Image (cartoon, rainbow, N blue to C red; front, side):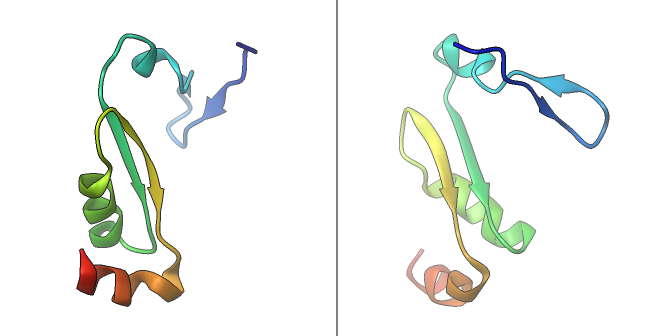
Length: 65
């Protein structure tokens, strides 16, 4: 894998594949609010992944979640 790094707002550098490489279940939700992002991360099935919800779709998506 290439040595791609992502910078966090706290100044720490993270390698995104480091944790998942060891078989740890990582689930990430991205949304316009903390509530949507938290609910999205809970909807990601094993073995983990990313679920992003657009702001325009958030209300309808929450009604179905």
